[in-house]
Length: 186
Image (cartoon, rainbow, N blue to C red; front, side, top):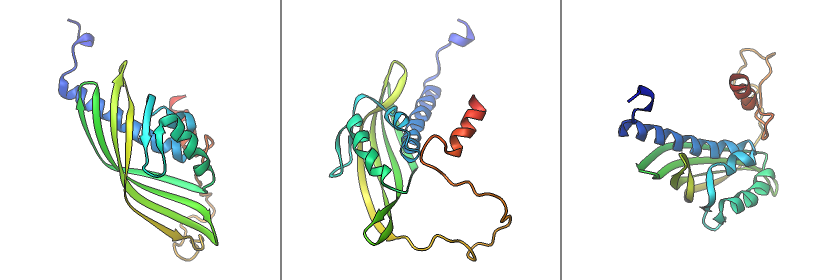
């Protein structure tokens, strides 16, 4: 048997599968924060579902259609992920990922930051060698709403190079991160 066609040891395949699943979890966050609808939808298999409790429950396609105008009305969003635990069993897997979400949005009397923490409890399935979410259950652990004050760091953190331009994130494919990936991967 040629070396390139040798079976992959199960431990190595487990690591490969877990990495592929982890990338989907991260890709979901990037898709939402960069307002990249295609990237966000690519995280679910066709017919996949999402349950965000009272906020939304239904198909992934309907979830994205619902959440898009909600997020478009916000100034900024940032979804961060930690504590990813994945259990793989053949072509099925379960994952729990902690999230912290920051949503800067206009509100009566000004701007607020909605900050929340919880967990995504995902059921994954590998179809034709591709892992994607079959069902996502969002579990909310805490939420707080904070008024946004002045956003000027002047005096709080003295700049080392005040003439250097600070790159600010944008919520579309003109974000700097797309430029880096394009330069590296063409």
